Image 1 (cartoon, helix red, strand yellow):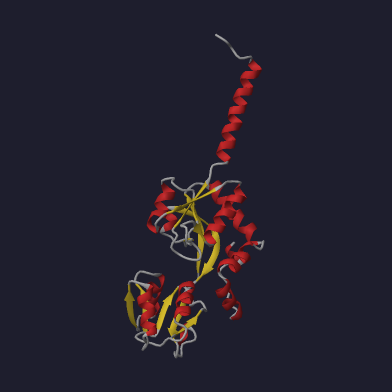
Image 2 (cartoon, helix red, strand yellow):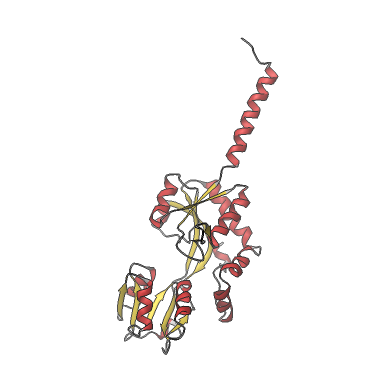
Length: 270
């Protein structure tokens, strides 16, 4: 039987090891997101993923030296997909909560937001504290706004609806005084009904919320890389350019009202 010289034998072994290491490094970063929250996560007219979170995912992949594979997954399937190893990271406007943290590890935040108000155009409401107990509040069932209203406005009449459009219609037709929801959605609906609604972007007190990357429990290497990426990228113009690219109109509104924008994360949170 032919035998390789000892030197050649070790060369083959070394090449095999280096080849395996190289293959491991170039494995795609599998990113899960639900493409249902424009302009953060959405699909273009050809069905391709696009939006703020897609750009963040691609930049993170570049930072890691890995190509990026976006997987469109329903909201309820995202965390199970991490736990089963189908994806490596969730970048889908997901907020860290105690319950979710039992299943996944969260990075430091990269986006901040809170609740805003959509009110009748002739309303005297200019801030949350202007809501009195005689006013009717519309909320989408099961949302953060719904939970918040039942805790903080328990003396008010609270009407629950299954869709955003139904809540907006209550304001447009003056059957309710205020709709509590996320500012991006409220902004889009105010643009559809500028003559019958008024938009209040000032964050409702006590509703500050954050989005972070979710990673499989115990994957410290990827978690540390995510945190380092967010900290380093926040020092560049990347997030500012994302705001100009996808959120230019509402960014100007925030600036005019001197309201912290989505990417203005307090330093103590990083």
